[in-house]
Image 1 (tube, rainbow, N blue to C red):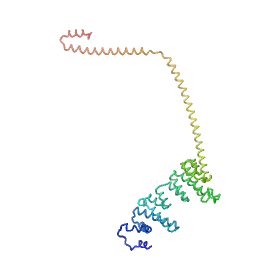
Image 2: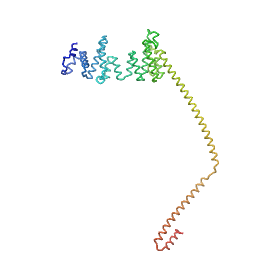
Image 3: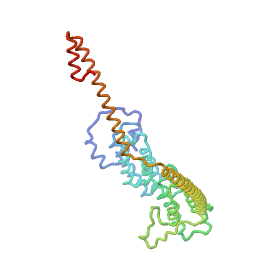
Image 4: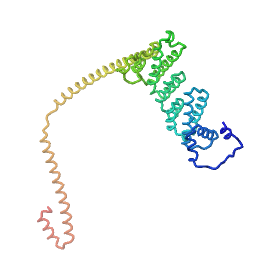
Length: 362
């Protein structure tokens, strides 16, 4: 108390010389409560603390909280609990404290509220669901349902936890018969109402197949496959009353009935379409056979043609045409040569006689 008064006094100097840590290490090791008071005062007055000092403050605070809980000092327990939650919920705690390092510290001291806070911050949904299930309160169950709305994949685990809670409460010998009703105002009635709401959510989200939901409600666990071998022989796995699942089962049966009717109508329509296509194919095949028979009769009436004779005539005509073109070309060249020679010679008679002897002129 004297130290607290000195620290909170306004007359004390605001600055002082810094001394090496080893001057105080022995005193702090022997008096951890004194170290916690100093660190808490620095944190309260917004003094800078390193990450290691922040973690030390959290660890010392949780140690005193755990000690007060064991000694049933309710006032001190509540005070240290509030201080620890303030450290963990600090907006700068992730940077200065470290979420995973803080998680190790709270797990060592079994500080459940701190674990839940860090699980929410780190988005560790499966671990968070397990913690809520261990708590088992109405508020925890509502949080579990809220997680299912944001992450439908965990709905099977949540429903399995609800069924396990209901099974434990149904096994209580002091339970009255009226308490097993969904409309009951007892704690079990509220739990069964939560199971009913989870089933409505499963029907709207359509993530879990009805067979798996039926196994969960029967007490076979939240897994995808049935547990054929039970470790505990006394475990009955009674599940929840049928009245809880009546609405879900009725709606599922109605939906499946409508789906079956729709599939039947689709099959009938498909069958009619196939029959119509089969008739059309048969009609097209009959028309094709008729046209083919008419074409065959026309072909039989055509006279025979000698292809070899026609080909030989074609070759003869092409040869004669080629020969005539060669002669015409030769005549043109000879005529040009004759007149060129006549223009260049003085003895025209001799030139005419020479071309006549070559059979170039007639």
